[in-house]
Image (cartoon, rainbow, N blue to C red; front, side, top):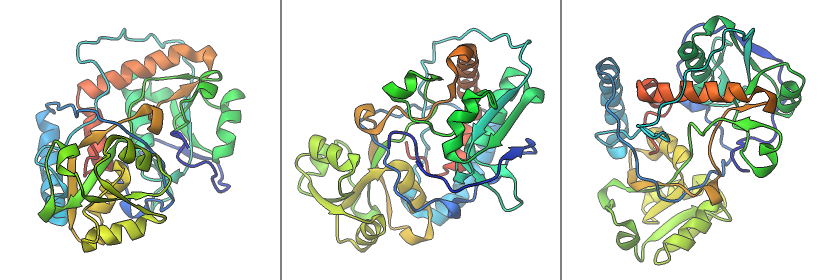
Length: 330
């Protein structure tokens, strides 16, 4: 599936967000269908956050630690794909008349309709912050369409950018200019808290029974890079989670984001936590999430890269990431 997280979407009417304030994510709405992300090893990058953000973050983490037990680490890791020494030129967008992002409504927590009927989600808030960083909030819009209509809408000029998880592939690179990825989906190991092991995992997990979804990219990675484990394959994720919680397997290996939501949810009964670090393998799991624009609008991609780099540097991306992913999957 690459990073196109949902290939088919139900028919929905176009919804335009008035940018009326940050939305509160509804984690219970996470879709149950499988999301085949992928990964090989990448060390997490630690950043010092602004004090105002840390004050809010500590309150959030204190609550989540109560709810989730050992699922949280003392210092949540923030994904960072930027060279801290890199500086990008500030774009000049005075002539821009409109910036409309195109997205969907059925991929929470990235895009969804909240309880008050408003378009909300990580991508909606990210678009808002990009526009604020570029100083063009008054020109920004975001419109939701059914997934099959997104590319045609961009081609017809109904929007300037797709912010919906369009896969970065050789084929799509021929039709679009992409920003640099702002988020990737690592694979992670999860074990019961009482039996958790430490790095190096290829040694600590030797001989362990590790659950993984049958036929997934994660199964290929597990078998390729952890040859001494004993893979136990499952056709349904809820069966894997049930066996992990019951101690019938020693651990699980899969999509870090899905596992993070299971850890924070009631189904896990606070049984388990992440062990080891994140694994990223672009050849197996894709290049991650990026914003797509028409080739004729390549300057917009440069502007978005500038904004994304600044949001990472000033802590805004970290705040947004932890709002929607309070148990960091990095």
